[in-house]
Length: 252
Image 1: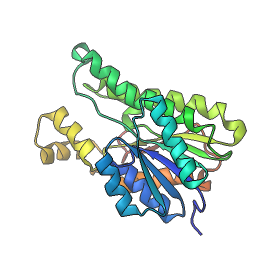
Image 2: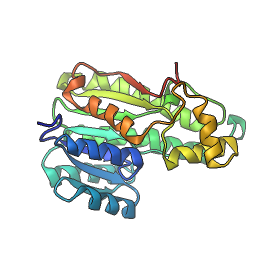
Image 3: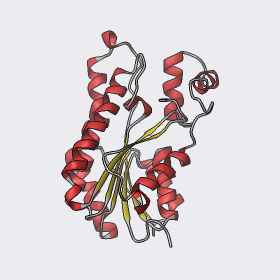
């Protein structure tokens, strides 16, 4: 028996490393998954790996309401129900001081993270089964911050406010809503941020970030996926409105 037997999950940012790691562990635990993402090629590769019987993919712009509605409808049409939503889509934005931060870039980062998660939650709720679970991917900098990441940190903090509001609004349906807060992850997304922040080559930048993490290493995508699985499963049945930190001690 799997921990998610018979359940259906929608994962935005599905073609990325965390999205795919989560899809793999959800399928292993008995769920079927719909991956929503912006890269048709990436989604096609994901579908080939996971298999058509347990996975489906749909090109989705999370900043567009109609596109998000279509993704939810696709999940229900393909697998007949919706039990889990993992709002995972995100971008990093540029690294620059607030005084110099480009207005349009600030708007773009908040659109993907905040508007994207808002729309994903809003349009999933009518289809989401009572007793379901919504997990929003925030960040360690959704609880802390640092210089140069004003847009990204602002967006990740905002997701906590969205989560806490929604958790109270849907508790009557026994739907749980939580955020997960990863520290630096060993993937292309994180390494690009590190290079931009330090101006150093990727390996040197990663080593510098390792020194800021008490466990002295980056997380693996599957370690974040394990935390998401916990929040999706009945093992966290009395958790809602919570911020689950998976950062190697970085926010301590």
